[in-house]
Length: 212
Image (tube, rainbow, N blue to C red):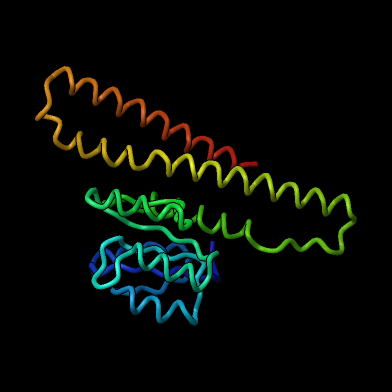
């Protein structure tokens, strides 16, 4: 599918920037890539995209500040932050600003594309309804359908984001699991399995919503 509206990608690590932009372009998205937030903001001011996909750690202006400034240009621009383990607390601060999702490095192309597709879906729900010439009952049905779609999308996004900080923290423990006793290792692994089951349930819900 070709997307006529644009994605801005910001990452000061050139290999990562090139890889992300290449994947998105290969799947039909229009992409502008930048190595600094300053360059990206200069571009976004005159060329508002659908989505800004930014690394959390950037020189001079970090991803959190970038999101703040982007939202001043247009509060409806979707923003997604890419982050490593060490930036969990900072990334969590972005949720009240409308950051619905995060990508934890390293991530797969499939994860990247899924997040981008959901961002475009949410953006489509924000567009004005074109039902002025419809009969009143039909127009009302379109509006109600859009409201339900919007509610379901926001609910699933919020549920997913509420779980992410715990997933990040647990992953850190699992990376150093050998420092724990055998009993605690089993407990951590059991908790990991339970959280993974919950995350899978969220993904299943997303898939069901998308088919409606």
